[in-house]
Image 1 (tube, rainbow, N blue to C red):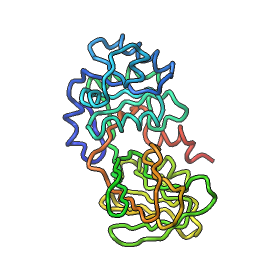
Image 2: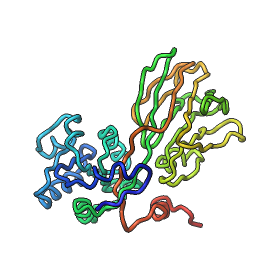
Image 3: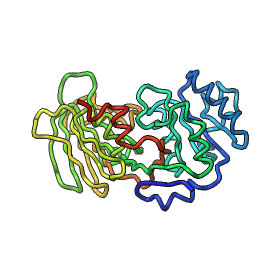
Length: 300
């Protein structure tokens, strides 16, 4: 039986413990290691049916399915790549409580904890119902213009309001639960999950937050005032960011996807999403072990 850690684990344990027949592979196009590994896994696990995202399926010569059908078929998602590819896999699932097994073929692999040499054993544990699965919080993001919602999305890592190439600062209002908290004059603002606390948030001077702690982290990017520091609030809080500056090169990105141009007066509402992401853990590596190994955290 799988061990699920994190908030709302009980609600999703049954979905994760069911017998897995359909495995969906996600990888970057043109990655030769992923092609070799995908073929080897399909041959080694003949009782399971392997599917792949369109570009990967085309390279492998497998049947191609639209992402909506892949999402419905998926009982396990196997990521062959790096953290960015894992985030794409979470986006593909669109909130379905399906475990993601991340195999690191990238450079850092903070979320993709399984080395390619360990993938067979890791997959065997998952299929036997003997895997540890972390439950990770997501963010819900809505963009409003002139009172009308024009965009919505969800993030595993972060929601970022950032300026373009011009060397000028931007003013943003930050509201929490309807109360004005600060007016930031900065290069931008990052709102991140605990999972995203070790990504852009950390580079901008934000704190490292253990993923078992559900919260929202608000971090200004290069603020003009040294007194404006990152703030951590509970997952029950709702954050609103309002763009005050008349600047033409300010953008909204969600988990690094796209770049939506913003206008003065636009606001972004951010809160905890009503669904989560489930990551299969490496049993030989704790969260702090990942910090030590991947980020060299705590070294002198």
